[in-house]
Every structure is written in C-alpha cells, then in structure tokens.
Length: 431
Image 1 (cartoon, rainbow, N blue to C red):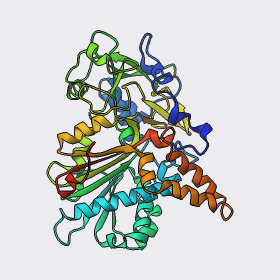
Image 2: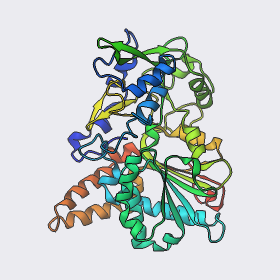
Image 3: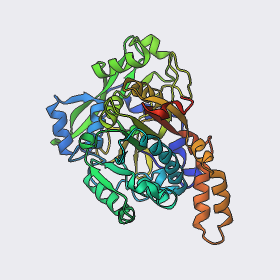
Image 4: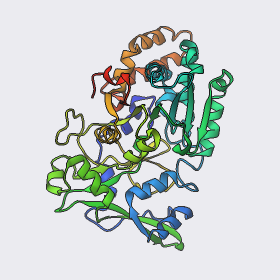
C-alpha cells in the first residue's frame, strides 16, 4: 500500500522513477548490507533460523508483512492514517467509493443471474484496511440501491484482529442499517458459490521474488540472518544474490516462456524482474476453480511488455520499496515488521494467472478513467462551487482532481475486472 498525498509536493512516492535508489539494497557489486542496530523481531529471527538462516526475499517479505506475532499488517492498526505510514484512496477521496459502488452494483446484478433464487450474492473484500471502502460503498448503496441490502452479504477477509476491530467500528452505521457483514481471518471458510471479490492496494503487498538477469544466468535476492555487534541476542539482515528458486523459475517460464537471462534482459530496464507467483494461489483461494466469479482489483502498477503482450504501459524494473511514516525507505531489510513493504503490481501477470483459473480480463484501465466515467469532473465543479459553505470541499476537490489526472495519481493507479462464466462474460470488450 501507499499514500495519496494531499499536496503535490508530497507526491514523490507516487511519481519518482522506479528502481533507482531502491536498487541500492540489492546486494549487487558488494558485500551484504547489514541493517545495523535495528534488530529483527525475535519471532521473525526464529523463523529465519528455523529455515536454516536464509530464505528468498519473497519469504522474508511474507514474514515481515504477515507473521502472526510480528508482521506489519498483523501487529495492530497504527499503520493507517496521517499518523501512520500511509492513507489509502478510500479514506481520502469519498467520490472514489461512489464510483466503485456503481461498478460493484452492476457486477452484483450480473452475478444475481448466476445465483440460486433467494440466495444472496457474496461480496468479498480482502484486506479492507480501516473499512473506509466498504463503508463508502454500502453508504452509497443505502442511498441509491437499498434493494441490494437483501441481495448481498459482505464478507471481510482480514488476518489482523486489530484491523478487524477497527473495521467493525467504521462499519457500525452500515450494520445498524441492516447490511449483513461477516469477518474472516482468511479465505478458507468463505461461502461457496458465485462471488464478487474486491481489493484495493492489496496485491502490491503480496511477496515478490527479486530476479537479477544481468549475468549469464538469472539469480535471485536472498535474505540471511546475521548477528550484529550486540551479540546473538540481536540479529540483523543481509541480502545477497543466490540461486533462483523453483517458484521464481516456474513464474518466469509461465510469463516469458523462458528462463534464459539474455532473453529476459530484453524486457527489463535495469536488469531486474519482479516475479509474483503468489498471485495464483491468492486468486484460487478466493474464487476457487468452478463457480461464477468477478474479481475487481485496484492498485498501483502497470502492464509490462513481454512477448505476445497485446497492450503494454510499463517496463519491468525493480520497484520494491518500503514506507515508514509516509516516507519512502530504500532499505527493505530495515525496521522489520515496522515498515510497509510493497512493489508495483504486474497487471499482465494478474491477467495471466486469472486465465489459469478461467477468469477473463474484461476491463483494464486507469482509476482516472473510472472516476471520469462516473462524473468526476462534475463532482470537482460541485465541490469547488461549495467551498464557501465548507472549506473541506476545496481539499476534497483537489484530491479528486489529482485522481482524474492520468499524469498524476489517476494514471498510476489501475483498475482490472476479471470474470468467469455467466452472461456478463460477453458484455465487455475485453482487455
């Protein structure tokens, strides 16, 4: 996840060139970098030691983000908001939630045709943060589509108990209005049958394999546990380039049809390919492999060029980075469990893995296009006209204006809709 700054001068984390300073921590061309006195939390240090003292960066990222005792997203809820590390779009731009509500309502109507009479459509939100998007969508539906109250069940998948408690508080009004909302620590117990899955700034936090293709053969970034000057009671982390894991190798072959470094170099601007094989099990756990489904993904990233790509708006490069107190951090192994680790989403890979599960990419566009189609320009004008009544309208108008700009945040954030089975399959133009 990352923030949507209020002030354009704060926009560097969204607009700075990817893979520049971030690549400095890759361990290429020098000895391993140790994170110094910033000790690794004991639970993660024990996990590393239990794995033999070294793991691929992807596993380290998974533990740093979701370790049940010391992970960034599971340790509490202080990461969100202006006092935390980032603020997401739903919390800052109410009109975004209205636009998403209109899109989801259309998809619910389509899925209703695939649902048994009398059964509700399951709407699954993954990693809902503090609950702002769910609250905004359900509030919009309460005003304009109250008929959906008896036709949907909103299922929140949230591994953090602390965040789930915050979400319950945020959604107190919707619960009082009669909207049915359930919480799950994982996707294992989600209802069977047709479902609509929605996520905002979640896929970017799935673990990535950092693959270097500068040499004769691809190599991968690994993380090693290393004692610091404090002795065995304090441990640091070092990175080094090691053997390519089988997961990364399979992902390269699935996406590029090759693991040959020379061929792969043609597709990367800086010699790095970020592979995210975790996308396939992520999708499979949410939608299974047989029922009708829609998947709506909002995140930052692009569709990098590779052989056979019909569209391309990006180039493979290293984008992995961290955020702490709204500031970009380039040392990915510092502040373990206390900083947000993220990397741009490869929407082409998301589409490919969706195809592996029978999901067809129906829409791929910018958030700017989504908001423009929903009447974003008119909303900005309305807010500007109402500034005299409420100065916060000017702030909201400025934020929305940035999301309508394809050269600003509105172009950096993308929307993808993937569908499987049913009559809605033929209603779109495809990606």
